[in-house]
Image 1 (spheres, rainbow, N blue to C red):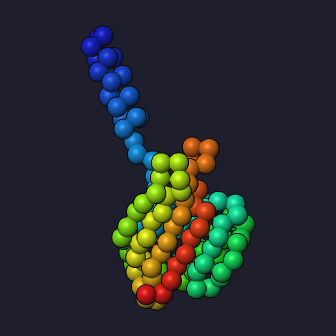
Image 2 (cartoon, rainbow, N blue to C red):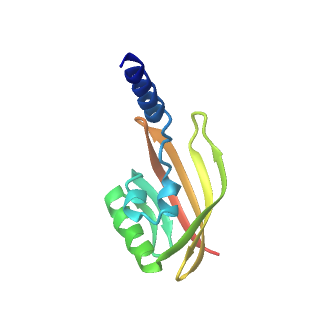
Length: 125
């Protein structure tokens, strides 16, 4: 019984500590727009075909959700990543939609142990 409890404890510990933090781009890969926009900082620098300015996270969520819902995501691929070590991280990707292909740029940083997107750009390829 002691061995069983010890094994259960070890398995649970490994499982809990072995989980990776969800990155914003994984939400795009999964086509989960609502989860993706939940990473938005307040305010966020937004540059998409339908809007270009600094917006509150609530305004940006509506704009991005509308754009991505209308465009209908086919796939998202990460092309390049960088930054970190106390600096903001960035990611350049390719977003394929029913309305064409787009180049994306994400700039995010960790704030209070959560990742926050501080800049998001979508440009027609």
